[in-house]
Length: 558
Image (cartoon, rainbow, N blue to C red; front, side, top):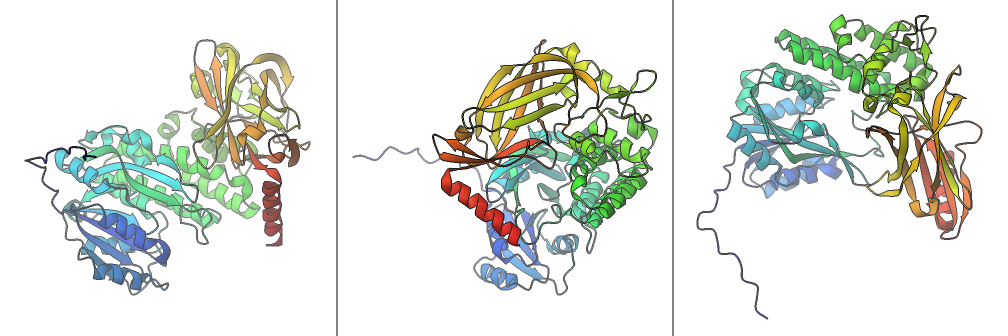
């Protein structure tokens, strides 16, 4: 055999990029991961002039590990802090002070840079003469490996912005790690991270960057992998939301962000940060509020009220029907926590507004009879594909033919006006992108019916509904956790992607063992997610059932 002919060498190869970038890696007691982070930075190639590993006074052997890595790598410098700072800002500032390269970027010890990240950002920054270049970050759930892009709409194409105000959505990407900065830009403007134990230092740092009005280049390339380990003994700061102090720290960071941008004359960006607080922060924490104790709820409610009381009329007028604004209005107008199940569903993505649908005496849609000052009238002007439509779902596992029952609720006449015809149904695996059971069924107009929200509201209402029954092949789903995804289709060709509210009560979410011709037996557990959506866990065969029972016993014992 003769080898395949190879391409002749390029007589004029592109020069290797000059070493211009410093990567600052920070870590504290993360010996298990910091080596991978450092190696991913060094593997970026010759564009990386130096990697500054700042060890925040670790006690787990991280220092020795980094020292061994530095012995064989002249580009790696290890800086050990003698006192632990308690946060991420101080070690990053230490890195900024140490850097000698023209550009700097940041990397956390438990994350990695994907191949080509530095080249993509450096090329964009130099071509655009930009002080800041940003790219796509992906959140990688471990151990499953499932990835989800972060703020993807910002990074769909190569873009150059002469100033941040041209893209107000920039305030939504508060990460500092998926960006490259000119070192002298940071130093000339005195841009630094908050020192010490400041939980959301990157939110404030990003505000300071935007306030300085840099020229910004955006690229669609993956430049950062944010590795999320929810089962870790020590949760990352962004995941550790079980203490109300976490919320107080986030509110403080968001308030400071507004002040920084407003003080710099960036009024549009400042207002955008207030909108982002409602759409992102408030919705994220409202989804989890039912899980917290009474003290947490009261403190959260009071702290949120205090912050929202600073908003002016223009802040509320911007997209007044957005779910976050409706939630904010309820919080602001009610003296104490209320309607938590309904707020949870409205905070979900996509949003769901559960019945009952109340009206004031003049027929204006309102939140409830006892909170009429929260108007829902803006919903009447929104396109149907953006409405917080509510679909109830109940899964009935059976030996022969399991059935999924769906019911779509009217919303102040808007659904009937759009004339729903069909619903696409599919189940998506929680751990990866697999889908099963994709089918389309007709919706039947059920006429006026009493709303059943599974015991989640205090009163009932009557309204038109549309229903469907869908066969479910549970054996075909296989083992794992499956989320229900629906797409409503209307007479004019419009559509709306939704999730379904899991009906509770009357044994609807009870675990069942179901005979299976394929697996012998299935253990099926329909349940409501943190946002109230229907999902199902399936274990197949005797072995799968035993594993579930063993895990259940272990949790009970601990």
